[in-house]
Length: 103
View 1 (spheres, one colour):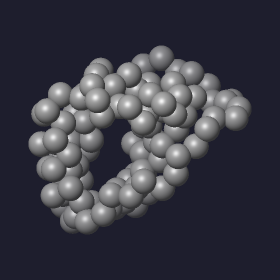
View 2 (cartoon, one colour):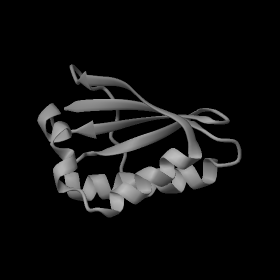
View 3 (tube, one colour):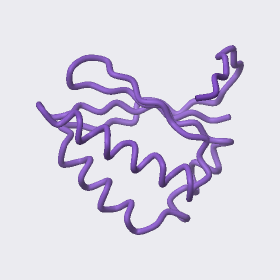
């Protein structure tokens, strides 16, 4: 498994819109680019951390090839509600002790 960790600094009073956009974008990437999904965490009022899981690094690197054009508009809207979007880490999974919970 391959994991990518992002940090989003969201403009004041834009968190609700950001979360909706993040959700839409993540669903499209999961459906069309074969990601294993992502989780979004809130660090403080305007900072969010997300990690996206991929089967492997190659699937991540090639993910843009299968995305619909609607992704571009959603990404632009996300940039508009954020002050910064940073890819913090790209990591290869070594061991996994997280409990799988079905929701």
